[in-house]
Length: 319
Image 1 (cartoon, rainbow, N blue to C red):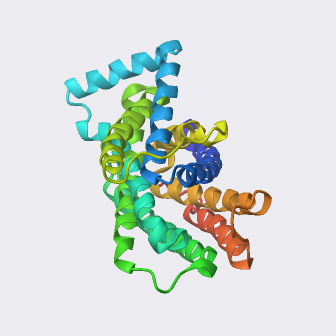
Image 2 (cartoon, rainbow, N blue to C red):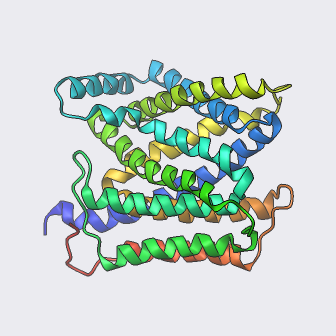
């Protein structure tokens, strides 16, 4: 047994814990961006502010962090030498699609149905990306535990939001968040490839934020031209922290996905997201938000799904 193989269980466990924590930050970001969108009356503009502030924060960090600047040069060299696909540069656009779909459909179909469609897309997308492989990330076998964990994660989300599923929602609108979920899975893998080429998580995160900001700037320009600008911008500073929280989410994915693959990362992040969402609804409730047995049970079941998906038979080397 090689030293690297002996450390594999520790690396996997640490990566899963890290992904759970990152998912918690995603839940906090959703709360912040949701409140900002409510105050502005414009979800797309709120998403642009979140992405744009994240891009600015990364740019400021690059000024003082030389390894990050060198990482951008390595990405340029990898593109020039054709060692990396240029498509990996636009991974952030998938994140922009996700937040845009939230602004366009969540208010119509409800946050609960939106979440089910998004997680369904993320699960399907992560299975596809892991099975096919991407860039330097080799394909991973679709073992029974991984498939069972993926199915259980979707069941966990459906159960968790079952008390808030509206029966009169236009179901065809769910196609957009489902596609966005698939695209987000590819984004996580693409950001992992950027991180590998750059040798710096900061470089990969900055590129992702810039791509998403460009897409959202175009969408927001069209949006404002049609509906007009907001009457006023909120003055509470915490409403503008979504970009900083997003840095943790994007950087975490770029660092962890190459270690455990997209599926296991996605399932662990979902578990963290549901758990922190429950805590936020209990400790800092908003509007008519409530926590019932199904909500808590769904979060717990998501944690079980991660454990099942990460199970390996002793001595089994993962493909």
